Image (cartoon, rainbow over all chains, first blue to last red; front, side):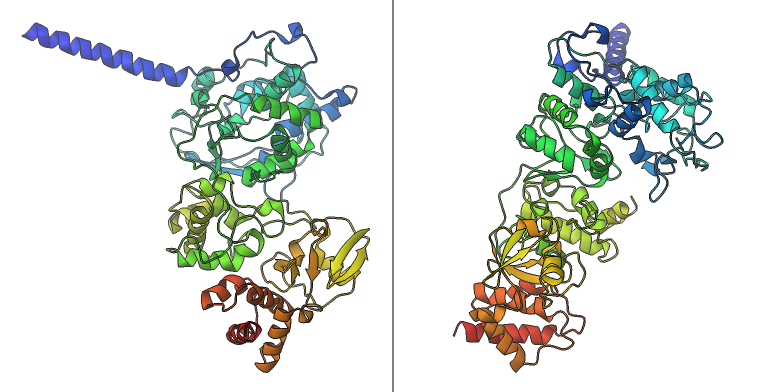
Length: 444
Length: 153
């Protein structure tokens, strides 16, 4: 009897160890960014065809600083390293993470507070491995797991551009992480498992355009950092590549080839228009962090590079998002049809929204204002709808229509109600966002 | 050079396509009946009709108008619904300071042209985006009902 019990215990123990090991293994060993594509990886030097790295052909003879400016735009360094209303690249932008608030550092060439004393080797180590000049570990809020794909030449061109900027004396702000998250050395383990620190290698069987797109998407543009969900260890879960993640309260939607919840139904010109201008007719309008990515990065890239990105994105294997509804048809043209159980939401909609969006959701003035078929209106969290109501969206440049923010015009209750009205009227998965959720988003 | 059909007449404006229709009406063509209020489609003072539909001219790039017929407050009296609204407005002394009223009249005329006997909910849905700082809402509501009754009599 005793022997039998011991055998069962041993077997159970072994099962736990093997099972736990398998789970840990799955968590620690994730597919690489291009593993989905198959084919033969070749070293850059052995790739036949135009180089997928560096700058586009038209900048081939530009100065190192000009090349660096293009790659800095492609890597969108500016978005994170600039505080609201602050000097570009002088840092200070807060990022609220589950572990505390982190402030981006000054990357102007100021010797005292910026990176003016950094050597090439130190800069490369920071961008590729997430190790600062003084040896401390950086948090992967700096997307070094993506930037590691960039060859030294591209990273050093970025450094040359940054060093051409006016130095700004602005001290870095300390982050508010508490134990154990303030133990930066632990990031060494993170890097060991989740940053392969391998430069980009093209795939021989794919076209030069695809490889260029792959380089830009996976390296400098670091799309997966927001659009790929994260594991418990905060690594990009590449088994769910591009199936949708999050950024600063916003949902970064599925950009896989899934036809209803991804971008599988989008044409290549639609993807290109979205990236270059922030709007693809009838598909989507870039808002929040994606609007920044369009304004500061994608809109600055050449048509050829935008086309390459679209070509590559169209090959991402489809993954269906269960928590995102399919696009709906246009709503009724009359206010009298539609959700009847949300009088506050309807009141706010008729006061503030209908002039531009129309009861049908087609948009009353400009095509950008179409609500129907947008992912945000079929998102049952309604987070993006609420954030758009709070912060506004669209190109806020003179003379162009944009949506103003309503944070100071409506209460949390009203904004929650109108967000729920919008998802019920125009989407296929009605939301139940509560005023307290809106209060949290307000603080983003 | 853009050609626009306004109140039944052809007008020409040498402007770029992204200029808001409101600026073209007021600053280029001198038709100042349509008012500038907020500039972000939140107050309704700039309302005009495009093929009979009320739109906010401040947020409409003129290049998107195309061949659609524009009606402004200067021309709405020539339409049956517009004439009925103007008469009701005078009969009931709807206007106080008047700044928002060209927009109110345009939204009201579009409403009664499409809705024979508008309910309070219909009026809310069509008029909530037209703001009146004098608070003439009660008389506006009354005026719309009177104009609708006479227009569809």
